[in-house]
Structure formats: structure tokens, C-alpha cells
Image 1 (cartoon, rainbow, N blue to C red):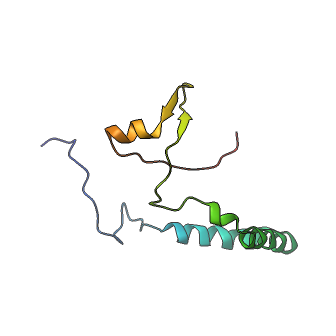
Image 2: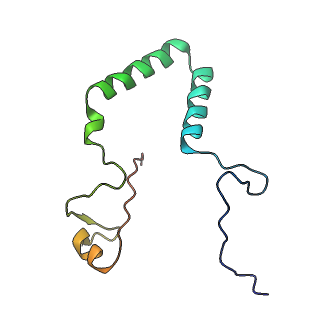
Amino acid sequence: MNKYQPAKLRPAGTTFRGVSPISLKQKLDAMKRQAAENIPQKTFSEMLAATNQLRESGILDGVVKPNSILPEFRLKNQDGIEIFSNELLAEKNLVITIFRGHW
């Protein structure tokens, strides 16, 4: 038997190595609970107020939503070469991951 067989998908809600899958919402809720327990109450309240101010400002109106149709764009890749979205889409599907980080 070939040990390199394709992975089999498990139905939603099943476990892998005894660990149940957890949704992103569940992870974020857990992080929020931990923050509330570990951050001083005054600081945590200020953080929540700032987050609510951002939401109320309309900043989320400009956020790219899943399955959005984006206009053509160009970006430089890791080698500094300019890549055009329409050229990539002419060859195959294009998946974009948007994340923020601190470097």
C-alpha cells in the first residue's frame, strides 16, 4: 500500500487526533475572554471604546469582503517584479490573502 495517499476530508464537527475543530469566531471569542481577564479593566474598556469608535467611523465600509470582484491591479512580488492581476487570471484562478503584520 502506498503511504502517500490523498488526504481524506472529514465531515464538519469530527475530530482530528482527539481535537475538535474550532471556528474562527470561537477562537476570537476565546481571545476576547482572555483579554478581559488579563488586561486591567480600565485599559480593556478604553480598547473596546476605541474599537467601537472605529466601527462607527465607517472604516469597515472600505474593507474587501469575501468573494468580492476586485478591479485589476498590479503589485510587486517578493523579487520586486511587477505582477498584473489580469495576466494571472488569464492563466488560472487567483486567490489573494490580505493580512497585516509588524516587521
